[in-house]
Length: 380
Image (cartoon, rainbow, N blue to C red; front, side):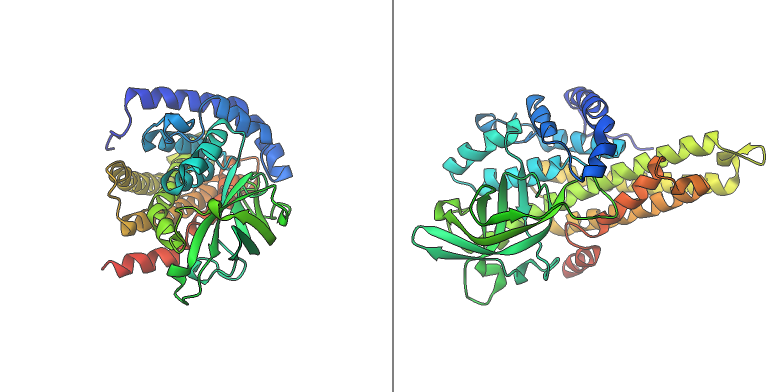
């Protein structure tokens, strides 16, 4: 198969450190985190101590100023291990980016060092109970009152929401009737009066990742919490970052598919049926060959998209295609892998079973795959 050329020796050294961290600090606790529906707060502090948070943020704000290949390494290793609990990519590669790219000097100084150290956990609040992927139809509103905003509304499906200390909130600040021109991004601290969190949502998969609903009841924040300093820039800011966010899902998906294949290969080589290894039957070999081929094809496309990110020219439709293809691929690979496990594939003690319930969300979050098809179609 085609060798990957993205990674330099320093990336591979970082990978070895990440792998040790996941083996020692994450996986021994993951089952317990699934029961409590969120990771321990101390995990964030430990990740910060080791320099695993906010990797691409400039050193002056607490990061290490690394390229996004380092972020890719961290995401891949989490995905290979099935460590779906830690919401590091949302915190480091989405929330921190919004603050770093659009925030004022004061906002960056206030929050980025705390996020890099793990002292503060970040979340982004887009989806609402009645809007789903339609971000232009949000109803959460921020009304001016003197030098403040007063925010009312609710958000749902918020990753890191339960432990969040700072939330980037998408809110309406205008009345033009044109959704794209009426939204803004506003920083809301979790200790503000009127801001509350529900208990983590009961999900069918990804149970260790804290996901909850957030409520804003006359939450007062200073207008200086506006990201970008000018109202009505929210949708533009979202669009600038969404391509990378969707590629994150693609990176996680193709890595999880590779892990599912490896787990299936190991099982089918060891498992005997009628005196032969399951992997020795032609049907098994052909299924495994198909899975391997599709994963390699997907990996090449994702790696090319990462190269485009490094050159600041990833097209939105390419990111949408990567997210669409790899999240669908992951579900196919996991389903085939589970089938080759037979009855044991339905047992949660096997990684393929957990992958089966964890993988389904990829076709929904980051914009449903139906939305991805619409975005791709618009570019035709």
